[in-house]
Image 1 (cartoon, helix red, strand yellow):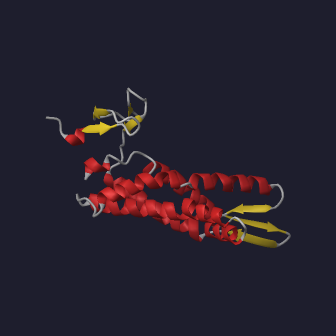
Image 2: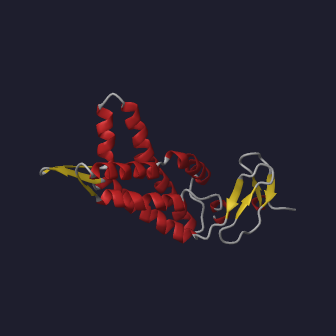
Image 3: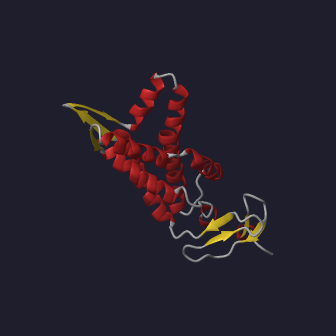
Length: 198
């Protein structure tokens, strides 16, 4: 009799398949709708935890240090991610400030926190308390974490303002770039294999 953990259900059309091992850079696709069922993941639990802790450190740097410093005729001003949220909240578009705070501050914090929680227990060979809820939360947080969109906006601002003012990219921008790549690599990939690993 086939064990249940060897089966995988397509999240788009509910077709059921037997899970087979994949080679590096391979992905399994649904024959009915073409959706990606799962991909090969070469990261171990220890590597994922190390990258998640690194993400937590980068998140602190991205929020604590200025993203950029603008100066003109001896007057300079710098802004962090939180400053951008606070500036938007004072205007007439307060709702945008809330969306920005969720997308670039709270969703990444929750993503990294939940990943560290789940992987910390997984390293000891146990399931974390509330494991199923944590896995669902990670899936639901993925579209809300938009650090790469914020990074793209910051890069456009740096390039546009560089011709008019003196613009110095800050430590926060470098940390934001590294954190964006890291979150895509760790949390943006298929994390369903954690169900089998723990």
